Length: 481
Ligand code: NDP
Image 1 (tube, rainbow, N blue to C red):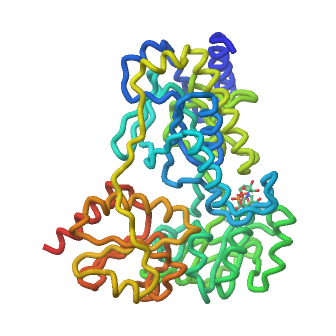
Image 2: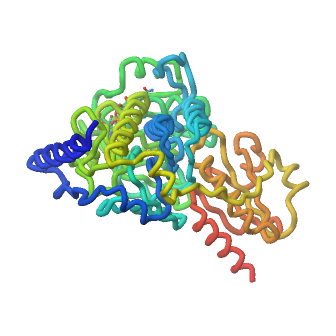
């Protein structure tokens, strides 16, 4: 591919984006790159030839193709390492695998990429500046990286209902977007799932073995989920489906949700449906906020790509997976798009004159191995009594099926290394240490429980980055003085 072709991509991106804009898109002006002079990269430090943002099937496949193209490839993992696939259970539609668990598949992909030499950065991007090439990417941990090419594979985030009470009872008080994470904590409970797609069915099935009853609330008179998926519901006697029901409010007693206020969309009759859990499975929104205003997007925020490529409206920036695919939204498609994005990025790098000789004279970025403390895994109350000292103890409750928990553990390990003498950190597998879960009222994971001389003094029910966790630790240490 010639450099001219690369520019043509940019131009066709511009034309397509302009045409889409005429139809009312959010994108207003194409930020064309002014200079793609490879010599400008020699003046910069922390250069990454291929930077991939996101570590789901699209990002990991892009990584495999990038590194096999003999280009240094770094993946910034983001807030949900592994992406949405880690929230599913059995997958039957991955060619060559009759049945495989989502988290197993994603771990295999990551191992594959790592073995080939892809570097993983456990960090989250806070800003992307595409006004000058090489592009500048900043992270939550304070890093500044200069990227010659970027693949945006940031996926999508579960949508919220936007009704009163939903936010009040989120984070451990009943409302959740991750059935696979929280299912083990719903034992004997009345559980609601809202949605009518494949995800709503999958979540109901994940909950059925634990909950007393699962009621699936569908706002229309039919579901859009695949007939084969709808058929699967019949195998679970404790799952029932109610049609034409829309949730208007989540109610509770401040500590926990107690039910939802709902309306029958046909009769307009209102009712309160008692439940202690509500799982949201109403679709996803693309994670494209980082490039809003700098890349062409449609009105829903999906990044526009050009023709049958993964090229975006800015030269050297590519998009793959659910951040740009509003149509198929399948892991296998995301992986394919990731491969395409990497091939496009390799062609771009070659066009701008990047090669092994010039790479040798660049100040390349290398992922630093962070200091960490391996956490002891507490398996029971007895374990806790034998191991925990007096003073401050932090228990990090997790389960192996919870993606945000698996993201939290390395953060806790890194922060624990800085408080070795002052605070003792343990991890607790919530599936196994049932007595500890009961004792410390853990309703969802991840959950951090802080004890001082055996007394519960603080808790936190969500993911934190290193800085947030450090601030959290400093706060409870200061309170004790
Ligand atoms: P979908 O976009 O397919 O479905 C969203 C559902 O939520 C729709 O039924 C929609 O209702 C409903 N909904 C949206 N907003 C509201 C609201 N405010 N109140 C009540 N209901 C609402 O999303 P999914 O996450 O289910 O699926 C996304 C993609 O992932 C699909 O392509 C799906 O096939 C795929 N997938 C595949 C799986 C598999 O193969 N095993 C598993 C899970 C997902 P309405 O229909 O009325 O618009």
